Length: 160
Image (cartoon, rainbow, N blue to C red; front, side):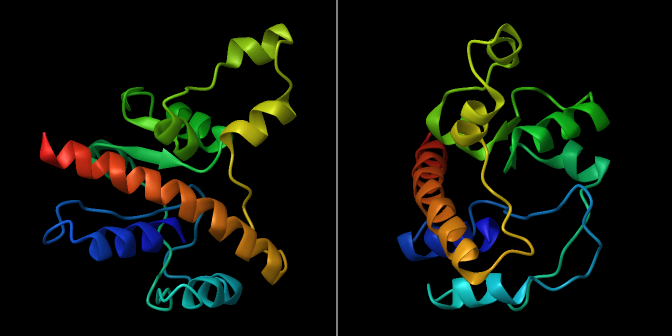
């Protein structure tokens, strides 16, 4: 949902002829799968057609070629960093870390200053896969808000 929401926002804002290459991939995705019907319905309500989407598995080549890799959760971020240690820590973030400018700190959790649940709420986006429609709708609202912030950040970068 995030990829399609961001593409749509940038298009509506008139950010030029595709100044950014935006794509999505999953750590354990099966290539070629359609988006969940609930996700398609959620984005249709927002005027975004998700039906053409097909899943792709994240590859080392993708990680190497990207300038910015955003994950939905800290666990995904950690997994990317584990699988591809050569990935620059300056290009792998959770979406929430990137748009807020507040990186997560595993030391705070280890020291007991913050619980896993506090960190999860602050940095992770719930994966709605397999859940009911209302969960997809809620997730899309959260992602949409973050995509607005991300679009603004990217547009500022483009102007530099």
